[in-house]
Length: 116
Length: 114
Image (cartoon, rainbow over all chains, first blue to last red; front, side, top):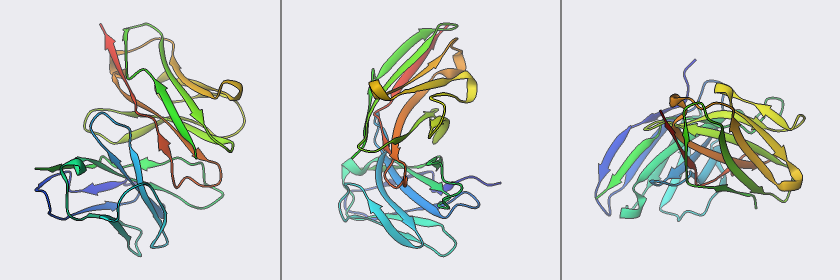
């Protein structure tokens, strides 16, 4: 049973560039959340996708956008990169069904973005 | 909105000693509470969770936590630390009805000395 997978694992960009990060949820999960974890900080909620729509959004600017595909995989896009966007970007999935809902998130190992 | 505060960004214990990592939460509705562990260059792994029922919950690797509503706390403990417990630990809270904005604390780095 494959867990949450993310790609790429590491990438380096320069200021002003754009980046796309990808996530495949755990088998049987249909909801994907994205988190930003800056060095020495806890993960910060960016947004969550369910049924190909953004359900909730954290306090992040519009430069951060996402997409969910019919197979439940998801992308995170960041435009006009700033030095402060350097972080570990974590994807987490969960099953949305009420019967199985426990609130637990299943995390991938993350994509580490460095902006120079 | 809900939030968690982890007291102490760094905790150091000797191998075999008690581990106590502190977490206090704020939530306008009954919360779901979690402890996650993160090893270097890895994602977060669930240690244990409180949803409903028994307030003392047991997790993996010998960890446990007690939900104390009167103190709004969910402290993580382990009777005897092992070298392999060295990692970053995060407390998190979400609302009962959905989890689409789980809030994490800033984390506590646990160091275990031989």
